[in-house]
Image: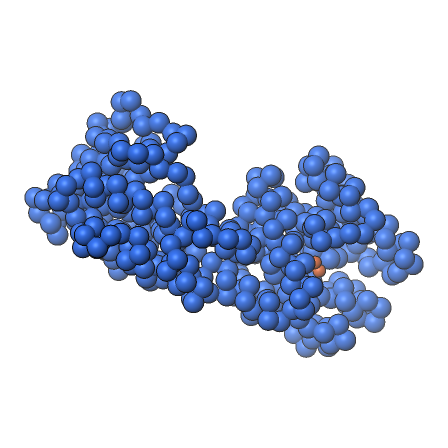
Length: 383
Ligand SMILES: [Fe+2]
Ligand SMILES: [Fe+2]
């Protein structure tokens, strides 16, 4: 008997996975397949949905995406999930060999995963234990002479590159994913509020419609800028989504809220008396942590610094600050100059954002918070 092992993060499982699996089942006659979601994929950052959620999504994907005859030949294998720790492929293969003695093992992979074999743990053992079934992507090649004596069999057809990372980002930014995700998977993602959908739902319910629209615009803009500047777009999007969640607290209650929670805002008393709205960024950080469950230090820092800034601004801090100042929904005089400066680079865009903010405050005859002066000096240091 032949067993096709299909491992991956499946975070979430998508149409590309199903296409690959269908082709593999048809290529190896009479085979069965075990789909093994990783507890945590060793080569990737930690998964965004729990392994229990991903198992449920996988079952929905298999039920919808495989014709009955093929579906009967496939099961999900929770070995890695049950172990509850990072598991290398060679460990999973040893387990499957013990469980199914004498079975011929195939390993199903996208062509880039297979080309990565040298980065796997114990590649020689893996190469000796399986033959690889490889779905060729339009832009990639299968190595002519595979490393470690591995056997590669190209599946007929070509397999478009669909990435779970891209799908997660699209979900988080309220962009359509119909062509990428099976319908039942999307329904389950929505029902369970995975991949940021719970956050979106809460934001939409607690912010005014205009503020929610701005939030989404900043998140999209931050993600696009992040891609351009080599920063993780998923985390930039999350920072964008949460940057104004403090605005759910009414302006008239911000000072009392910040005092009650003991938020440490520079020049707090003066700020509370003169411009309490400036407290909203610290309130956003507090709420992102306590209500939205974010613990990522960089995201929290950028949210906290997006209005007043700080003498120390990381690239991630600067990105959110500039994204908020120049999102497509902004129409104030001077926003075009920020966008132009961002085309030159992140530091140019950030400096122009700060300059524009200070100029606006002075022209409007408003109070200048001491941190805002410090952030100008910080901006100059990066230029
Ligand atoms: Fe804000
Ligand atoms: Fe904002």
